[in-house]
Length: 80
Image 1 (cartoon, rainbow, N blue to C red):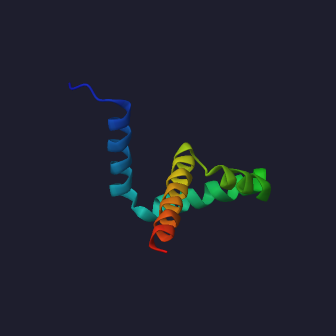
Image 2: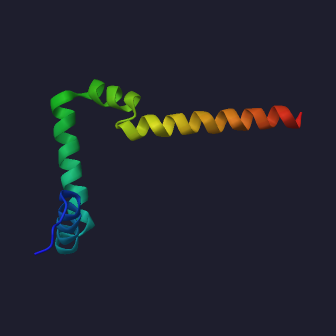
Image 3: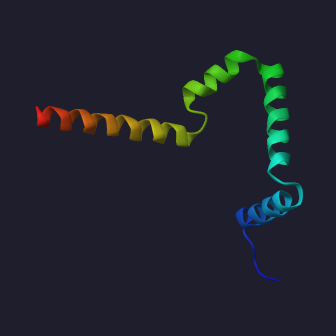
């Protein structure tokens, strides 16, 4: 028996579920979860997590966008 990481096991299990139930299954459970979260926490919760970027990755994306805008502005100044 080979050693499998938790990540590999999760990926393998997720693939099996996807193959068995299809993309629609994930859409349905995502919608149910979203509806339940909305009913439990309300609009303000979604506004709060939206401002946070939702995840740590969101902060990195905001940072990259800001750097890209800055570089674009500097390039435009140089062209003038």
